[in-house]
Length: 351
Image (cartoon, rainbow, N blue to C red; front, side):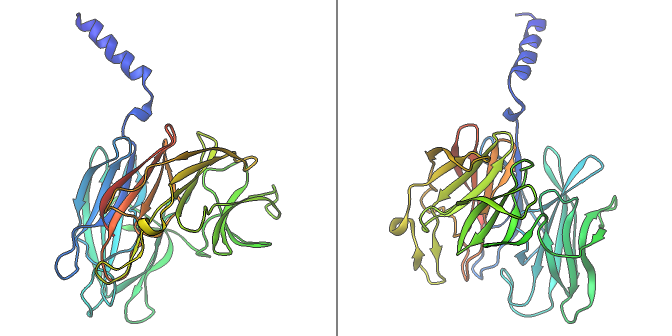
């Protein structure tokens, strides 16, 4: 076979396969294996969603309680940066009691690999807020003194500059989520569904259940609603996927463990459901399809959590990281592929 013909085959291969063949990355924070005193290292990890595998894992210098389960992402000068923040002190998780509070932060660059660029700490500080919402150009952040009300970093919208220092973009007039509607009878605190630019879809809690709400164009009248709970015995993960033009709601099992060894509050054996995905038309909120999906593997269980999933390329992803008191438990990543309507569970550390 000639070299020219081989090159033509290679070119044809890349043309005929979609870009989704290649890695679609997702980034998480997690604890490592806790020691005999219940203290664990902190890791940042990149997940290849196509292969359902941990691609890279870096142990960070930070200690204490991971403030936000995912690193905040900043795009600067054509580079993607990841920022992880933790807080040590007081009676916080993953902390020895007593002493001054310390805020730790790490800044990494995410290219083909993730590489640590800077680690630093601020003694005598505690975090007011750390959060990042879809569509905001930056992340919400604020730090104050642990002994009085002195503001060390005013609560606002932040990015970083070329020297990897925090840069205040703007002050925040409210801590409400973007697009929040406080009340439309009979619902309160309606949150805009990301990626929907056509159907005026919102989600909310009402009567201890999650609901999908469709509003009119003036955003002052409820046209339709959909109860997202299955039977009260499952956690749910939901999202609107713009490429598929479908709303997905997954119902999955979970477990709750108390602080006592082998004492189980809620187990799959006692209350389990058959996990499934329900797929809806976003215009009519009518059910289009329903499929069974994979349950989590024995011993690697998610906790009672769930909610809005992240849309990453072809995937809907949810990170079950909500902590339980006293002990550490598996940190589980739920990965749903909208191309095949199949779900995968990946153990990524401890929560």
